[in-house]
Amino acid sequence: MESFKKNPVPKPTGLNNFHHFTADWKSVILTKNSHPHFHINQFEEHINCLQMPYSPYRTTIYDFTFILQDSSKHSKRLSQYEFGNSEIFCSSANQITEDASMTDDVKGFFCRFDEIMFSFLPKNYFNDTYTFFQFQSNPIIKVRKELRSHLISILERLLFLYENERAISLIANYLFVLCEELKKELSLLPKKSKDISFQLTESYKNTLVKYIYTTQSTPEYAQILNVSTNYLNKCVKKCLNKTLQDLLNEMLIVEPETLLKYSDLPVAEIAIKPCNQTASNLARFSKSQTGITPKEYLALC
Image (cartoon, rainbow, N blue to C red; front, side, top):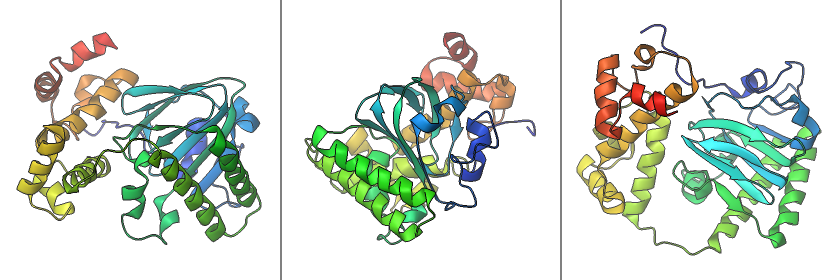
């Protein structure tokens, strides 16, 4: 049990060594000249320093990639997405991420930030309002031509402020404006009504992502959301035709599947939290959830 290795969770200041060949390339990490909760860079300036593909990892922060030329591939959970010109890929905190590839002549911006940057907003405003950062959302935003130049201006301003050590409050406000612009962009798309059941279901899914390593009990999740287990279960059932336990089980299988697919760890080492404690238990659990055992899944990868 002691030898178990879960998907790495590099802290912001450790992402440089995780992502790049050289430890002396400082512009991508949160250096002493930068704020510990925010980073931005342009791909074309540092593309030669990137080493792709990266191994799957979790981050404690949010990030987004805005491609202005050519394309990139990233994954969210186990689903891979390819996106290109005038498209933004958004990643939420605490989710499993893999950066698969990027073209050599890619142009665009990469930005990462901690939710603490929005401490001036009302509680839960960020998660409830900027749905493109939610765990279960479609991570790709297609930016209209009319908005593209405006977003570039905001990002260029953020880059200038970042590189010149300007007030973090000003950076936070520009970042807020950018998120509001993206929210407005999505508002132009057809909407589905979002009643309390939908809102609670989304909150439950996002809470699963955040606490899956420490909490594997549906009543505990209901307590975190300050509702009864029965009521939360009814909301989830209404929206997804699944139970609380169904969604929890889905989350409990994501981590071992990712490790099976991308690591060289034996099943015996993977068979631990957030799943079960033995390889045989994991095999039974996986079989019940996906129809195949870990070894069968590995053969398909």
